[in-house]
Image (cartoon, rainbow, N blue to C red; front, side):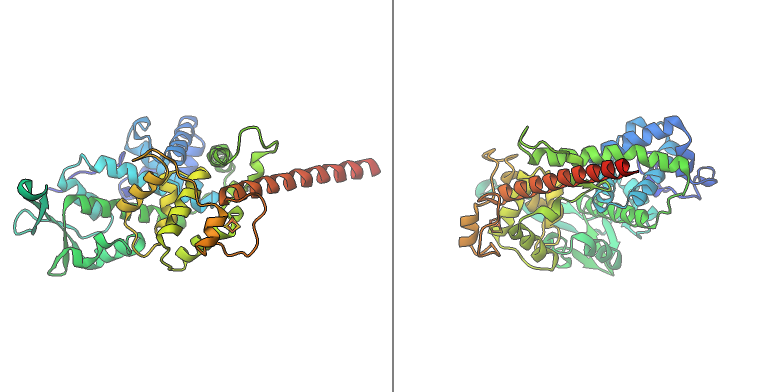
Length: 392
Ligand code: SF4
């Protein structure tokens, strides 16, 4: 008998067929007019955006979790901010992955099937991959059992999204037979997590938010959460008390315009990654150190590295944690100074950027300059208004 799915933990698997009553009206319309559900939706959204996790425990049952999930899809689509959509999809997929750690194999198969993957769980005839632990006399051979089999086309569909450059997912590193890729539980669960993320991003894209005043007022209540998330990022980049300006000027229509303010050397590394280039070790170090110094966390920095041709999540995370001082020597590294970046031919300019002799200083200068300009624009606007009012 197939395992039963608890939709409270996995609301992204629920459809109209299982919960027809919840879809008589749009879930986001139902939630918008219910005070308690509105509150819970805001709480879930806040944790998802700020902590990268879904507080499942506050949702009393499956119905509530499904309603809140579908409402969040509509809200995120309405807000139309890629960074926030990404945070939400990551929060749901990572929370699901943690819960799946404790699930039986049959439950993982049921979740995969519900997502449309034709996975099989084999109780006999599955490959066992030997690997060696320990060194010399203490070396031991252990076996990893590959009981999950995924059709090659499903496997490639998942891997081609964001894991394409990670060698541990290359087909040559797996047992393939009879049109199936044979996987151990951990690898299969990681692929499932990735497919959940991918599915949620698709659902956000397809969502059709209602044009309803209650829903719009719910979206308005979400805006301070997003602004506060962006403010925290900005806060970390500013020296306390140095800037007498309004941080919200860096948030335009609930979006942070941070990337536009990066110095040319950092933009060049990002552009090179986005266009399929393979950045050197020095470029990777400087990109990670720069991002760490302007306040991004490990997951946010990882997003910039996902398109590198040899991307390996485990190794990249480990290295970023070192650069950020979370591991090893606990020293938080700064990017090289401009002089060194020029010596490594990583500065695209002949001259020096205004604002300092390090990309972080230049970025902070750009932030301040923009804030000053906004402040001046606001003063001019107010003066004009006062003049116009006086002329009537
Ligand atoms: S001058 Fe410095 S901050 Fe500006 S692009 Fe060159 S290395 Fe980067």
